[in-house]
Image: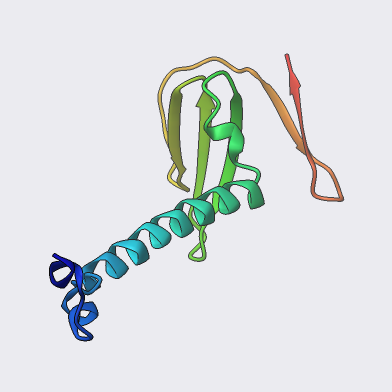
Amino acid sequence: MSFLKRRGRFDRYDEPLEDPISGVANLFDVSVVFIVSMMIALFMAYNMLDMMDPKSEMTITKKSADGKIEIITKNGKEIKVQKVTDKRLSGQGERLGTAYKLQDGKVIYVPE
């Protein structure tokens, strides 16, 4: 029975080769990890980790290249985006206070 256990010299070539698709799957996994790490790095670079915290409150003023201004306000889980326009509005309301612009460009709000 020793002839049944004997291996020929070409038997090692009969083993199946590694699937080339498995290498592509590994590249996909690496790219997903890279994308997630880049998103975390961007949030840390712009100090926006508070946007993920459901208890935090913050206000961001954003000015685009064409001069449009947006005010982004976050209170808890609610996020509001307000666009600032130069159009005049009319209606009824109440006076809340006065704003003064100093020589160095700072604006001070004085409530009444």
